[in-house]
Image (cartoon, rainbow, N blue to C red; front, side, top):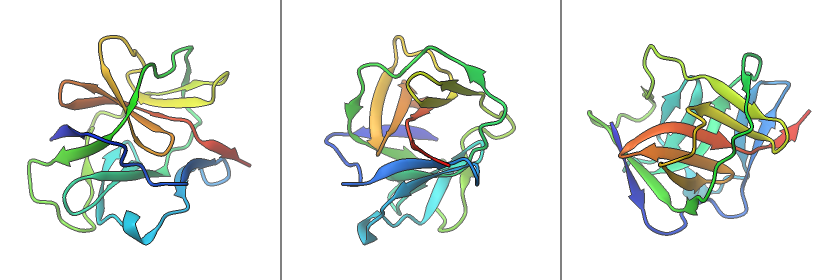
Length: 155
């Protein structure tokens, strides 16, 4: 699996990322009919929803913030653009593909800024892209090594 940068801002307009402490999950609201995905890429249980061409549309899914590490890191110098995944196999609607099979990524939280990071929080010598509302991917070459999320916190 590899990731390709798509020039230009492809984020869902007027949408934002939320986190429900009650449900332990992220969501993107509101979604339009144009933002309908067919499957997802999983990081732990977090889902990066993709369309039939592999373009990542938005973030959602289960991610209980119970076991995490504190960090002072934040995403630096990111650009808005699209992100497309090229899978090693055909995209099958409804069948998710796990990015980190058998290797759960650690979760980090910067309580001062509200950023949550799944994966490697180091932001030096990497490419950072805002690919969906309030969602930043950290790329090293053509691989995602972290996803940064800055949700609106719901009770």
